[in-house]
Length: 137
Image (cartoon, rainbow, N blue to C red; front, side, top):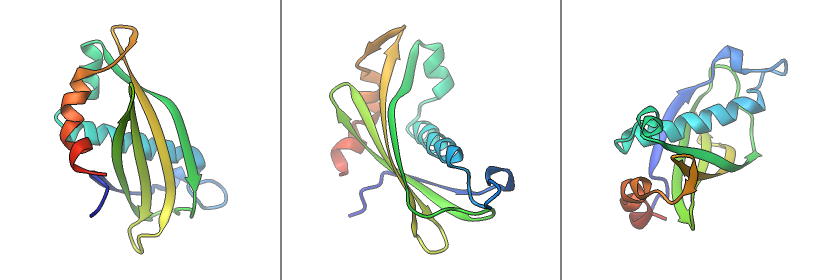
């Protein structure tokens, strides 16, 4: 059974590459964040609306392991699954090159919620993510 609960297909744009012709390392964080935001949208949540309601999910820790570089024009698939560890929601995110499904990057993103300015447990996320965390992994 596939452990991933969400995936998003994207394509490398020319300006994301460095002089070596490969994606600059900082752009992978953008890919990972965009995937998480799209996942939230697919779960019926708006990142902007959450902020307006005083709920701000923020990255507390991020680790990335670079395996194979992407190049301009490469299509890739960003996949994720998540677990809850105490107050943290831990996103396990992997990026694969679409043409051969070769692993590009493996990342772990630990997030926490700031609710009305205070670090808090989020019942909103607990409810929204419940089926994802209990039916997978």
